[in-house]
Length: 203
Picture 1 (cartoon, rainbow, N blue to C red):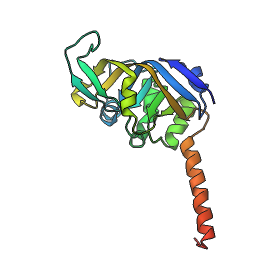
Picture 2: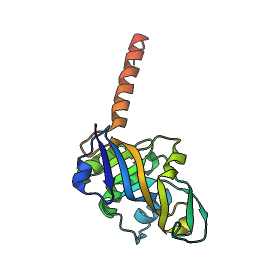
Picture 3: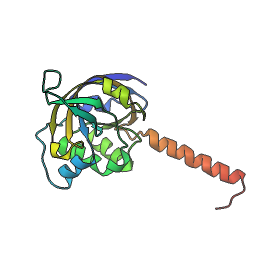
Picture 4: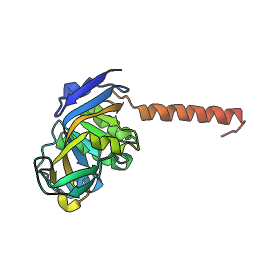
């Protein structure tokens, strides 16, 4: 297990160096993505003016408030609560995120499935997990909302955050076929079989 401090954008080699159970702290830019903006991008053919190549994207729809634009709040948005949302329902967008937008790292909670794991291996990506219920802490790692695109989808806009010390995040899926979620499922199935056997349950 190792800890990695990564300033975005990152290279494929940097991502390939990550292994499950490593930890990562992100510095620089982190993009916020959610169901609506990915549906717009990949189902409806919309384009974004953001360059996501080599970047990290977090599954989120942040709670923000309107403020006067300033150096601190250049977009006129102040972050109130920037937390992760459950990733599983966005499973089908992992491959196009990597292949079409060049995203390297996905930040979320709850994990992704086999299709995403295959995409990480083929394209050089990884999934960084956040513990649920830590939105207040995560918000302290966001220095500013630097820009926003697709704001007609608010709050599921495409957000560009400037982050500092964003982590540590757990590498839960890597580009070498490693998945903590698959390991847990395998152990759980084994425990289930053992319990049924001890109870004399015949399948």
